View 1 (tube, rainbow, N blue to C red):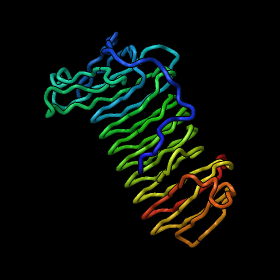
View 2: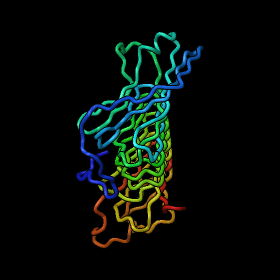
View 3: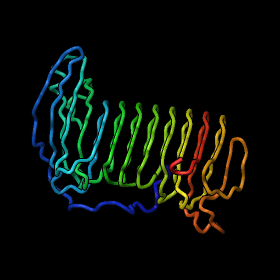
View 4: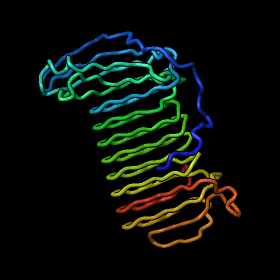
Length: 283
């Protein structure tokens, strides 16, 4: 997906100045079990003067929700089949650099096989700019900020985000609903289901093996291109000036624009093996 020329959000919440080191304020309710060995702890991370949040894990699920509090708080769950000592070798730290609080596991030895899952509540005025896992599901509900949500192996579900989002997986379904806008949605093996209430640049929604469905409002002005190699291209409930229409391809302009004046951006729906469908938002 090409990066938009203007990353300035229309509804982004601008916050505090950057800097500082995030302090881990609390560690309580620690529970350890075996087979596999697990450890669950409650943690808090103070954003300090951070203007944004990034959450990362190399293996494990990430779930974010909004809170009215002033710190990032929640549950850290570590799991290993290599013994309890392996759990102690992996910590989760929060550090602020260049105005962004990054919460991520720290591994002195990369060979230590420990899964780290994060279930965190995020201050509603702290924009989330990145959420990433290599092997695990990613979920976000009600947070703010223009952000990228990605995983290699897992599903992504983003809901009620006050910002423009991009959702990316390799093996898994990706979805974005009730968001401020969409920058793109990509997966290799899985379905793509997204709302596109606004665009700030060209956006591609693509799956190699799966269906691609996008819902747009009546007032969205954009050029649209639907293409699939093995599947159907369809539209329903949208005002579309059609330039070309076949079983596998539809090209046109949304919003009843004349002379392309309102088609500043292009929305592409692509699949190799699957249907591509453009719907009216709310259908």
